[in-house]
Amino acid sequence: MTGTDCSMAELHAVLLARDLLDGEKAIVGTNSDVQVAACNLARASHAPTLWWVSGPGGMVNCNEPVIRSTARTENIAWSEAMMDLPQMVDFIDWKIHFFDFAILGAIQIDRYGNINTVCVGPHDKPRLRGPGTVGISALTALARRFYVVMARHDRGSFPERVDFLNGPGFLDGGTSRTDRGLPEGGPKFVLSPLGVFDFEPISKRMRVKSLNPGVTLEQVQKQTGFELPVEGTPPITAMPTVDELKTLRASVDTSGVLRERRRA
Image 1 (cartoon, rainbow, N blue to C red):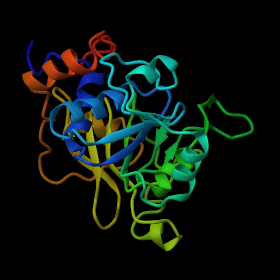
Image 2: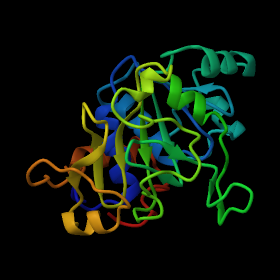
Image 3: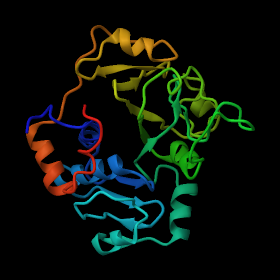
């Protein structure tokens, strides 16, 4: 096993885990393999008091080293605590910055980090329907920060403007997020099969942070529906170390759910 011998899902879990801090609080959705792995990998390495709660099930810190849907009742026996739905609603819908971060997927994300999980094309006659809003609007608005994991990177999934905005990022860029009444926050990183992206501090435009091995800047620009700023020559994404992969596979994902995904 080497640090580069990993799947894309394992790479994303490791990259996210590195950025999570001890003592932070998070919420995880239903089909969230990478999200659960990232949180539990961080807990197993450098952030033992980080805690996460299952949005659909209310289970806190399910520590079973098997990745499955967070809604499954099997998770109860491996969890440290349970929360009732009314508590969950209070936290999600009313508590500004109660959650330090959320890790989300999307069918579209635009240049200012606004996300779409509802539909592609007109809402009344969409070309594609997504899972819907669920709690995403509240989480993107109220968490201190959020991360977005994209399964695809093409001009359709990275358009200049999302077809349906249900997860506010930096809205129209600059200070428009807070100017329009939302608290400080917004997306920190976007992870895709091509690389890692962050946001310019002033304009809030998405920019290239690093490129995955074998990916060129020209390829990324061609497959993105808007211009991506870049400072100098972007570095190659730091791949998982041997120790990170060992911990991930031995203590977090023993059944190899992430390993079965397309290779990085």
